[in-house]
Amino acid sequence: MLRAFKPYIITACIINIVFVLISVIDIVVAKALTKNYTLWYLLVIYSIGGVFASIWSFLLGMKFCSRKSSLTKWGLISFLITAGIISAYWLSNIEEGAYKAAFRGYGISLILGSLLFVLENDKKQKSI
Image (tube, rainbow, N blue to C red; front, side, top):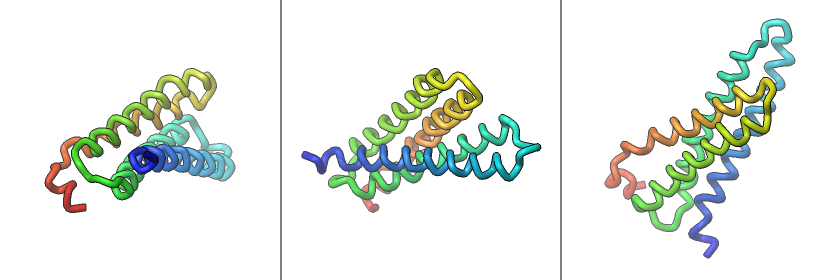
């Protein structure tokens, strides 16, 4: 039973791990560039982190799934899109401060990063 949910659990863990790492990187950059740090740095850091999170979580999710099929691929893509929508709209509405744009950038880049795998051929997917 747990084997069916293992790719989704791994994907959720990777998304959260990258989010925490990006938050730490943001704190370090904010301390290093105290005078020059603007909202654009924050937005770019979280957006790049969202793309890395979507790529890394999709690849690891496909690696740890029991059967590699197009159903699993589309399930992980829809999971990433759902996580991106949650981050872009629900979490950004909780935070009304400066991090609202960062959470929205993270969520939108999660969605756009997951769309990189839509055009991937299913025959190529079976050879992984």
